[in-house]
Structures are given as structure tokens and as C-alpha cells.
Image (cartoon, rainbow, N blue to C red):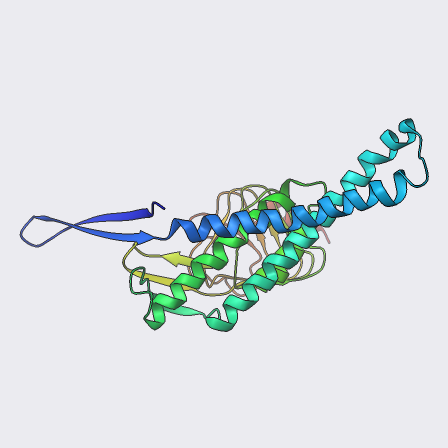
Length: 272
């Protein structure tokens, strides 16, 4: 099986180009996707056969009634498929976490020394980040988008509060603490890790978003960033690594995010 190759060119002191190559086992990632897809599928196919042979055929359901109830049953099976997919991948991830628990900090991004401590950490970090992508994509595009929260809680053990709503945005895969009543508009992106270079270091820190906060479109929130309760982050704002707001300031915009004053709110305050 061919392996993916990650390549980087660095200029040495004498001007020569040095090449570094790391081979990543593509077969492992193909296996993860194929098994994650097929196991819930076979279970749902078994449920479909049970429905046909234990209900439709024994009770001689007329063909027209069969066609009327089949779409609803298939939609129900799709929901069951997503639940099984989430739970199966969560079970698989828990086994990896026992071998190499997720940790916060700054680590060397060792890709070729798979037997070293940091090499093992990177191996399972990439596997956890890969296995969650299929259930995240399927739940976000399904008629049941609330299952995104279940995916994040179960597979990557994120802390997701009540009434947290995503609108087609890229949420953090690990180390996110999103509290109650947070609303994220489309194209918002959370990343609890930052890669300096392919062969450099990687930072993994928890992102915290306080209660009743709103993130508008085009926001990038980096690892270790903290948005406190009632923050409103306006469009196209960058909350960089370990970003912190200002005391008693709730509205932010810019790159990096800076406090802004809203004139109409100040006018309302003066009138009151």
C-alpha cells in the first residue's frame, strides 16, 4: 500500500536545500474510514431486513402501505446509523485514549519516531482527529444537526453546554469548553491546536467560550483563547493563541480582536 509523504524544504546555512520526508501510513486511515462506515451500515441493513421479514411479510402489508411507511422507516434508520456511528467511533477512541491520553501543552511534532513518547502521542492525536471527521460531516449535513454536540461530547470528550448551536462552522475537535447558550454563525472556526511547522512543535490548549456568547461569521479562535460570558465577537475577527479580553468589555472586532464601543448602546444607556 502506498504511503502518503509529507515533505518540507529548508535552506541550510551554506544555501543548499535539505529535504525531510516522513511517510505516513495511509492504510491505517483508510481502514479507520472503511470500518467506521461499514459497521453501522451492516447493523442498519440487519434492522431493515428484520422490518421486512418480521413485519411487512408476516402481516401481509399492502404494497401501497409499504411504500408509504418505508421513507419514514429509512429516515429512522439513518438516525440510528448516525447514533451507532458516533458510539462505535467513541468506543474506538476511548481505547486509543487509554494508550495515549490527550494532553495539553507544547510538544515536539514527531512523525517518524513512532516508538518515542511524543511519537506515540502524535500518532494517536492524528488518529483521534481523523476518526471524528466522518461523524462530524455526516451529522452536520443530516436532518439531525443537533447530533454534532453528541459527536463532540462522546468522541473527543469536549464540554458542550445546553443550547449550543453551530451554523456550518468548523468546531474544535478536542479541548473545547463551550458553555450554555452559545451561538456560532457560519464560517466560524475553532482550533484547539496550532502547528508551527510540519517538523516543529504543536500547541494543544483548551478553548473556552463563556455563557450567552455570540460568534459572528468569519471568526478564527486559536488554541488557549478565552471568551468570557456575554461576549459578542463581530465578523472577521481573529482571537489568536491564548487571547484574552479586557475587563468589563463585551464587544470585540479586528485582528487581533480588540474592544469596540457601540454608539447606539451608549445612547440607550444615556436615555435610561
